[in-house]
Length: 496
Image 1 (tube, rainbow, N blue to C red):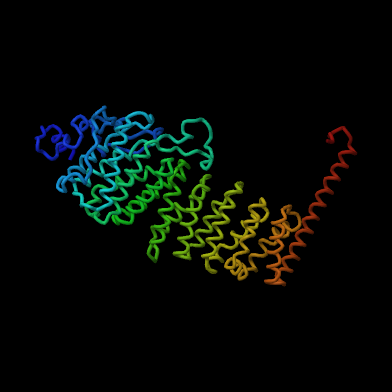
Image 2 (cartoon, one colour):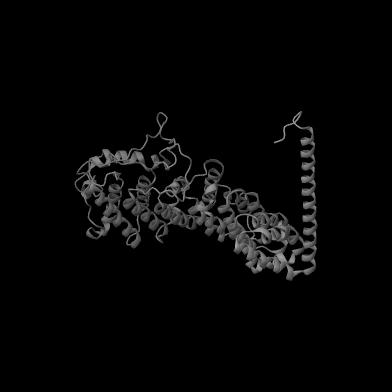
């Protein structure tokens, strides 16, 4: 195809040739600056690009093309040309949109920017209206134009060029893409093409291939939330329309998660990718494939490990609960996974975990609950004596009727585990709300089983008595040592 384009560029156009670029305001000088989509890669500016040191004979690095003054002219609208000429006009408009313009300076190339913007608007309207089915060649050229515009080197993240430690992603100001007025229209064109009923997947998959999908996934690391929102919608539509790409897309997302969890812990688009997965998981057929269960264990559960979980926790929790709702037998696996990554010193993270735990327990059946209840309530007991926010959130679990029924069925195991934590809160917790909730939970257990409650109370009293005895014995031993030391004076020891 590239050879054909080169040969076509060297051909002397005929006056009546409908493919002559000059007919539609796009001259030969501009054609020489066209960019091949196959040479375009997505990368961060701070990371080594695979094209930065190209091998001899390999593809050259892509340099943004800025049209010289006067090379871009406004093209006629589709309404103003005969139907037979619209496909050729479509191609000419695509060529105009391949120009790369400098948006770092708002006063630079103002006329060219407006022409390109208006051209993109007309292309979007043409695809959306379905007024004419575009040819296979036009589809190929359109995907090339889209690739030239969207597949670019992403700017470095704010933390990458400083010596400071990573700041909280929620507190950072996102970088907004200056070329968004054009970029949005390019994404809209791609979206309209993918969702169009006129788009034949057998033809389109030749151009929206694995390489194209991978580059789209790379763009999810963009800091601009507007771009990630478009990417999320487009990738979801591609997943729904191109069944042949589904396993590849799931595997590629899996690899992004692995790199995020075990290498970088920095990625802007984890939340958007999880939103896509939430819909995908919802459509999983039963019985669930082993591949999907492995994805849960190896990717989704370990996503609880990174520090910035608060950015994407809502989407992650939805994916996790979708698995449990699809197959309740996975509840034990999920709960044990949460306990494995339970935070030790981060109260905010603990608060999130407790909220997710409640959602998972709502879909948990008695058999699965019994498998994990001992380690689970040991952790809950620790939460009851943690900070007041964590303790209060843990006590809220007893407001859930399904969880209370599970606890009631297994009270003989659970109450002895958490009784001491409850008593400590009642005796010494300073926060009034925590104290009141603890009293209510204690009363609930008392009403469930009086004999069990009294037995736990007796054991707790014995344990406390033994602890006091040990403490008294320890103090007595220290007093004896102090007395011996004072009798010897300053000869061999110095009393502090």
